[in-house]
Amino acid sequence: QVQLVESGGGLVQAGGSLRLSCVASGNIFSSNTMGWYRQAPGKTRELVATKTSRGSTSYADSVKGRFTISRDNAKNTVYLQMNSLKPEDTAVYYCYWSSPIGTRSWGQGTQVTVSS
Image (cartoon, rainbow, N blue to C red; front, side, top):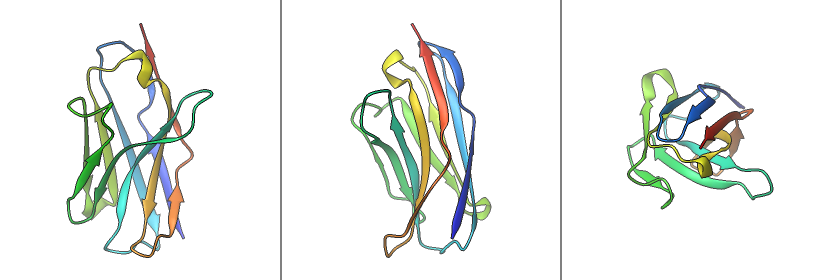
C-alpha cells in the first residue's frame, strides 16, 4: 500500500503561481507513474499531468505551457508548478500513484482557488 501526502494549495490571484508537492511512502515500486488530477465543483475529475519514473510526461491540453510536472525519484516526490493561473484552474487537486500492474493510490486532495 502507498500513502500520499500533498501540500502547497491555496488562494492566488489570476496570473499568479503555486507549486504543489506530493510525497509517497510505503510499498513503492521503482517503476511507477505519479501525477495529478483535479476536480472542480460539479465536474468530473480530470487528468492534469503525469510523469513516469522513467521521465515520460503528459499534460491536459488546458494546462500545456502553464503547468510543469517534475519528480524527485530519490525522495518519492512529485511536484506540479502552476504558472499563469486562471479562475478555471480552481479545483481540488489530487495526487496519484500507480504501479505497472495498475494498482493506484490517491492523496487526500489540496484546494487551489484562483480569484479573478
